[in-house]
Image 1: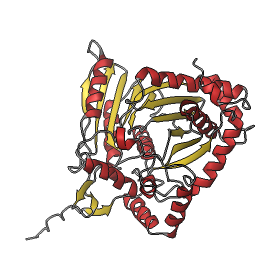
Image 2: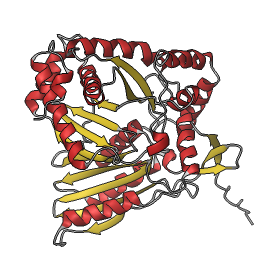
Image 3: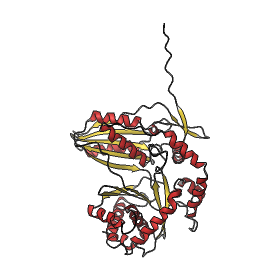
Image 4: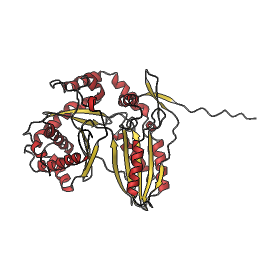
Length: 431
């Protein structure tokens, strides 16, 4: 008689959290069941979609991202993330093609997915749905928590999904362990002390002002978005060379002048998201490591786009090498002072995923976390550029957010016509 050994039990490994995750876990512990740190993406697929192929690609993609399947354990002294067997969740499926108003019903389903808390301790880090809106129109809705994925992690995941649908071989992502261990090594390195000193120096000559989030809190903002006219996008890209900068720097300069025009503040402190992937062990790891870097731009009422672009380039050169020092640690160093004015995110490679010939894909970010005041997101690809403005609901009405968006677009148009003209006055004008 042959005796067969029972199968080995599944192996569960415990890892520490990255510093980015720890900040989000602290927020979750203070306000359990919150939804402010939900991030959500939709893909609208138009054309002859193969639903079975899409489901298979979704299953394969979700299985390939361990960060979406960890369980968090907090014993009061330390918190760990447990990696074990992965069982991808199937999407909810709704056929709305016969509904009298499929778009409205789809929006209601999406809102419900976004607004229901995720159970982080229970291992529920995402939920998703496939919505049939018409014979050749399928929408995928994906909601996760920022503790699992940052924007670049989402980009990696969507690229994997597209390749899977095209039935191309996909190289595995690098292990989550590598990103976590690299983050821990940095916290114990001499580099951290140097980075801390450099970023603290950004605020050395500024008076103390308590962070507004201490009184009004962080909230999901009202959003207004618009595609910029193609001619304006061409003008922006063409202006970058003569101004000796990349076109994203022009948008940071525009944003600094815009903040000065709205508030009168001379020191515009831009919160610039940094992905921390270049040359990193996390380069091919869908996870959460991103940070916010302070870009200080000193704006006067007569400063031009040219002058401010030079300042942005110099500020980025000074601070970028120190981007690994966490903004949460900086906030603690500075005893809760206001770190930032607007958050400005420029995504120069935001092309929608390519699922193959015959399918037209539109990607849309529904939620990317809370706002303290204003958040500006410029998403570009090929000859396109989309601007989204999110405004704190206690400070701005939806109509005011739309007005700010239009003023930014008009101000950019006027500034590109004369890069040496005073920029702040151009941003006070209404279209």
